[in-house]
Every structure is written in C-alpha cells, then in structure tokens.
Amino acid sequence: MRKYAPALVIDVILVIVFAALGRSSHDEGLDLVGLAGTAWPFLGGLTIGWFLTAWLYRDKFDAYAAVPTGLVLWVSTLVGGMLLRTLTGQGTATAFVIVATLFLGAVLIGWRVIARVVTRRRVSTG
Image 1 (cartoon, helix red, strand yellow):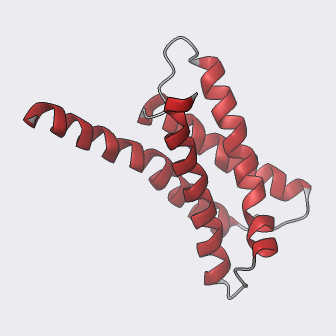
Image 2 (tube, helix red, strand yellow):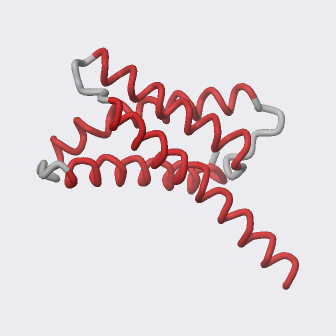
Image 3 (cartoon, helix red, strand yellow):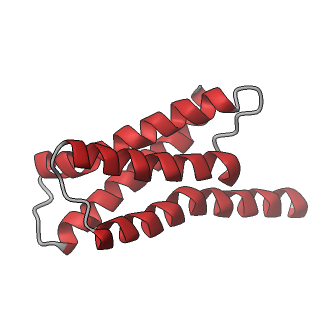
C-alpha cells in the first residue's frame, strides 16, 4: 500500500481543490466546515473507486494507470459524489454535473497521463 499512497494523496488533494474552487466560484467561504461539507460526497465516491479498482484489478492493480484506474476513479467519484449529494439534499444542477464531470475527469485521469509521459521520457533519455 505504501507505494500507492502518493497516488491516493494526489487524488484526495485534487478532489479538495475541486470543492474549494466550486465554493470560491460561488462566493462561499473556504472555512474548514464548509469545505468539508462540499468535499465529503466526492471523497466518499473516490474512496469507493479506490476499493473497487483495487478489487477488480487486484492481480494487476496500478494506482498510476490512467486506464483503468483513473477512469474508474473518475466515474466513481462523480457518480458516488452526486448520489451522496442527492441523498443529503445538496444540489445537483445540470451545470454542476457537467462541470464536475469535466473537471474530475481532467484531473483524475489527466495527472496519471502526465505522470506516465514524464516517466517514459525519463526512462528513454536516462
């Protein structure tokens, strides 16, 4: 698990950044309670995605792979987050779902693609 911890930390930070950007774009405070209230549904979805991915691909799990790991994490974070928001009476306006889909997909898959490209370049030039 130790070798996967950096990937998990990056994912958590990116979900918190998503929540913070959302709150600030709506002139909501960035206090800890407010930020936690916005972030927790998506962190719950992210957690489900980590467990799901590790279970589904247990023999060849790669926390740094854009596919399938990043893809599964994106979908689980988005769907899990929206379901938890709905169950707790938080908003899921269409525009919010679109923004969340695009942002979470870009960051949860994107950083993995960038990391893979950088790693391959180092190996080929090293």
